Length: 548
Image (cartoon, rainbow, N blue to C red):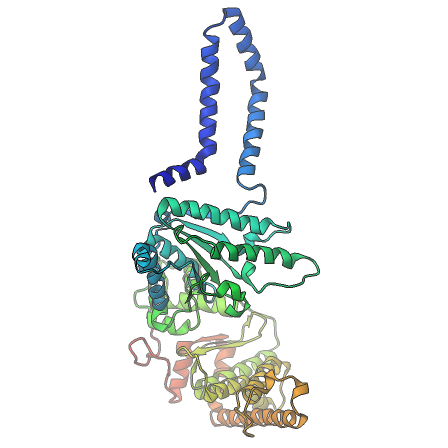
């Protein structure tokens, strides 16, 4: 292994060594030669060389630069990043949450470290692992942690770096990458190649492409398959691929055992992990210790670690803008709303328009708060945000992976709440219900056509069946049931709002007065009418009104 390290050092620094040797020879040889010639001849030679030295230096620089360019692969060389394990310095203890993924990754570390024991029982080391999951959840971080814990070099490339307009460039880059990885593996015992966004070169192969781009991608992928399948187990090169695309778009040959032997799903954090993430990122800034991290975690359902980090960064900017010396819950809440809902703008509207928008949003708010089984309201606003004239921000109180019929009914009523409130107050509605109707119609269609939630008892996903393969009678029946479902839920929503119309009017007035209402203000108003808060703190008890 020592000889391989020397060989690797010479390979990586041969150009510098060559320049040093040539420079030494160029200096020492003239000194030795001039020492044996006459004085006049020596002066003549020195004067001629001094006069021509600028051109010689320029020619040398051009030659060496061209040589270096050719050695590194030309103008379109692969921009791979080689990192030593000590330089990565990211351990599993630095990764917050992702316990299941870390457990799987730790097994990979043990396999890399204990390759001798694996071979002793006749086994073979793994050749690849695929990290799958949504963006911003820590796939790259996980691969770096594996390299650090295993103590091996880490070569990082992006899938897009293999794609060029020139035929054969991608395959050539794959060969160079694996050749270098094998040399590092011989010198250090193992080497990890990390290919980010591997779906760029790993998607299903195209049999025909009129413009020829598919053939270049195919050749690049074929070379990758050959290199992974042709790896000598003694080389100990492990390929990590990361993708946030669905797994079925990748080529089957790439996913078969012997290439990517393991698949690690790096998912979004759960409630407890989000709470830890908020604590981790807030520890890097000054913040109010009275902030309830559990409440923040509930407000950030569905957020990735990158989202939470971005929230804290945005909250810090808001705190500085407000001349505050520390982050408060209000700053973090404003950051979440700014990221998810957009920046608030005040539009010039007539009093009647503002009143209609306030009534519309109050209808949404009351409907969600009083009837939705899983969601709670975090914000109500009549300011222009992200293309909407008003918004009611509601989120699930906890993670939902399999919503039931009650949840879908709750979302249906939430979409119809604004329409119902306008209809009750004004007798007619406005164009503001257009997007709500689109959401409601889409939801009802999915329930009846695709999930068997209609009244006729039809079983099957009729949305997935082409219209030529289903009878017109079934389509008419399902369409009728969809309308019946919408009418039924509109009736229930109108009934709910009429029974609580005083609350609707109160929220309409408050929105006209304040323009925006936060969760505590919303909960306080409902509390005046005997409607308790449903959102819980991390300990399990209801949050008192006004708690930070």
